[in-house]
Amino acid sequence: MFEYRMIHRNGTTVWVKDIVHVVMGDHGPQKLQGIFVDITGSKQEHLISKAVGDLAAALLSETSLEEIAKLTLSRARELTASEHGYVSAIDQDSGDNISYTLTQMMGDPCIMRGDDQRIRFPVGKDGKYPGLWGCSLNEKEPMFTNDPSGHENAKGLPEGHIPLQNFLSAPALYGGELVGQIALANSATDYSEKDLDSVVRLADIYA
Image 1 (spheres, rainbow, N blue to C red):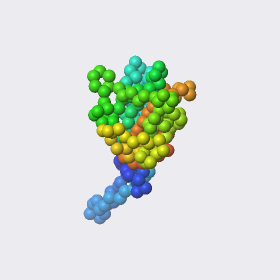
Image 2: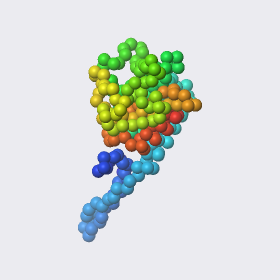
Image 3: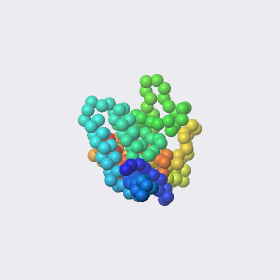
Image 4: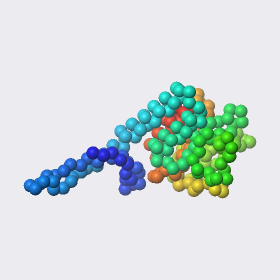
């Protein structure tokens, strides 16, 4: 009996349990018979619970914000099969969105050198965050799109940025105030409401 992920014919990712048994004949083993059981719901809930537990344990320890952000991004990517992403915090003085951890999605020219490897996403003069990445921050609502270039808030990508096949973002809110963001991109399959719900749960703990 094995458990693993498969791509369903409708394009979604599902967890299955593969149950196989040997059919015996007159002269010994004759063939294998097996069935796939869809365990996506229970498996996803188990993975979410584990991710939330790992993050909660880190928050209760003397773990730095950078390490919390790294753990949050790692768990969020695992839950959504996302290739890229970042986890950030809002600078309470400037309002800028500061990424504490970032995959290589923005290209070498965008990465800061030296001791400070953070990326700063500046807030606009109107108090709004530009582009697709700013959409969930402005609305304080989670969102995803499987057509980033066709989204109404798309502004194009800077030179060196990896192409986006899909994009998901959840604001981290504490007492209704914006304190950070979890953003993900390029999942192996289209993002779904299930993915969004999973990341929102992580964002609530991260906040």
